[in-house]
Length: 273
Length: 297
Picture 1: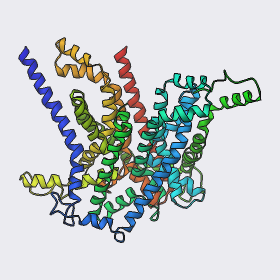
Picture 2: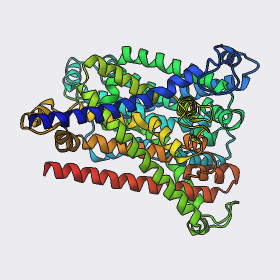
Picture 3: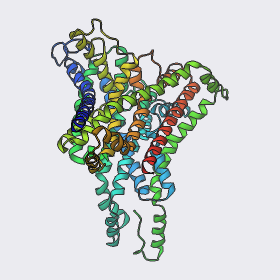
Picture 4: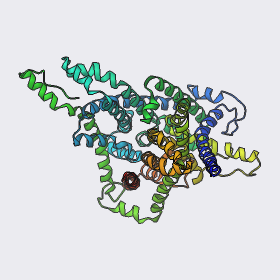
């Protein structure tokens, strides 16, 4: 009896452990393969890469050869910064107004503001294109900021509302009873306490905007395209090895950003909760 | 956060404060207005656009709906899109769930490392993750080179532009969306439950299927929903890895709107995408609620 159980346990360990190892392998391998390929000397995406060189990175950082990539990266940063900025202001205000409101309307409003997360992005992208062209707007970065705001704001609203609901109401009550005005309490008690939540949400929103394809796809043109759209174009046409170099830069940036966010606001803890 | 009026004197200032108090929820108004102008209005206009017969948007009618659903090819596209989502959900559960189980048994330090490994791809651009799979699956890619050097195959396998390659890639691309809700729910499970099950003589398999799986159902359902929604609408991965021969709804929407410029038809296709994806999601979450209801009842 004891022997049969241990056999069962061995098979459990083998199957579960094996599948989990496969999962880690599948998650990690592509990232490492791309990093290695970006240092290739050759002109193709052969793996293992032929030789070692920085030539694709040199070409990528060359201002004249990669002018369009630089422009696209600049557009991406501009759109992400402004849409996150507007998102932080609007989402923080909204969650201050709604997070502690127990009325049914407040819950409905909250779900409504979160709904862009559920709606397929490509549908909203097409809707935004039809809407803005009906209103007579030409494609511009401003339109993209507006579109990205809608799809990235829910990340900020979610983490800010979570922070606010964890806030001890006794702190606010004591602030009021000590004679502090509503605005003073907001500035000196509430905001400092929910700042990590806002920051974590802003970070997720910023990354979602940088990464966004469906909205940018419909709202950008050749002059205003973002980095993902430009990379998609390069992948569909020539399969330029510079895409690997861009990927290398983005992988490094994501890695560093994540370390910083982990140290400052405990990002992974917030994402698990 | 309510504004206490206890200290407010009953003067003109008091009624001003009373006015302010009544308006606290109005802090949500700017966002509400922005959403009406930038979210609700575009979607309503999209529905309106779908109710025109011609691509010049002059003849109102249900012609575009009739045209879209009169073509058996479009049914196949819708079915393929939903099937792609189902296949991706299955593979992410198959290898993601065991990883979440292993995560539970790891010491805290290693748990942190594993979470880092899981979240990092999420912060990487989908375009980068898709590109990575081109390098792995391509003719001269890692898998073909490895298999050829081992002598398993003599000719490179065609993995790109096949559904198999697409499902493998999407498994990695969507994996964090499965793992984060799973781990979040599973790490709140009482570890004593597993010990109790073992002490009562249940094998680890039995404990898994009768204790852990039912209790982790909310996380599993949430993960399945996210992966399904994301993989059915993953335009870049579908077009770059699937190629032009595998047509899914997002590609069809893109072609109709930005290549053919038939906006009413594109609107019909994108509304079909919303309806089909959301109805599968609604069905899944209903099943999820039912199974957890069964557990408690």
